[in-house]
Structure formats: C-alpha cells, structure tokens
Length: 77
Image (cartoon, rainbow, N blue to C red):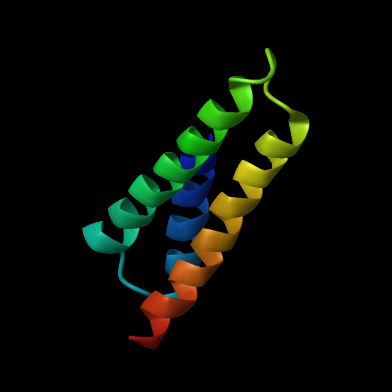
C-alpha cells in the first residue's frame, strides 16, 4: 500500500512542479520502501497475529514523506 501511495504522490507532485519523471526516480525508492515495510511487517507479525495500526499508518507516512523528498531532490537536480 505504501508503494502505491508513493507512486501516486510522486507522479502528482512531479506533474505539479513541472519536473521530469524518470524510471530511477520512481522505481528505486519503491524497492527501498517495499523492502523496509516488508521487513518491519515480518518482524512485527512474528510476535502478533494481526498487523498493528501504527504499522499501517507508519507505512503510509513513509510513502508520503519519501514522495515529497524525492520531488524536492529531483527538482533541484
């Protein structure tokens, strides 16, 4: 879910700022977000049956923050 949020926000922000959307700017952070959230989910779900709410909200936050950061980085280059 966080990967989808990142993709939608990043593309929207890049269109709004007039930046160019490249494969590197879109795919590399997606791999990092997916790996981070998957590892955290694996470690947390070993101890609990259900996924905690803070993990869901946190993964959304990671995707949103990463989209804004990548837009800023891409616009300055």
